[in-house]
Length: 109
View (cartoon, rainbow, N blue to C red):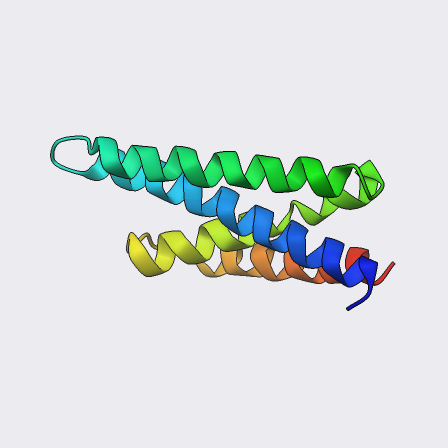
């Protein structure tokens, strides 16, 4: 695996963990009694995400790394739709697809 592929994989994983952290924050507050365990999982996911992001940031240009962060919007919408049963209108899905295309173009650059 090339260094660029490794960096992209780590950025994708970092943004997935960040979106997962956001999901657990929301899920913790939806619980009948706010769950400290769910909140802790969210904080841990966010912490690991940040550490990975810092690592990759030391190896790639900021403009590349920050732009790849757009993937987090994609993950957040998918997690919310699948696990929180949040309605996602067609226009929002179109936005997600637009972001995905942009992230792919950035990854190819």
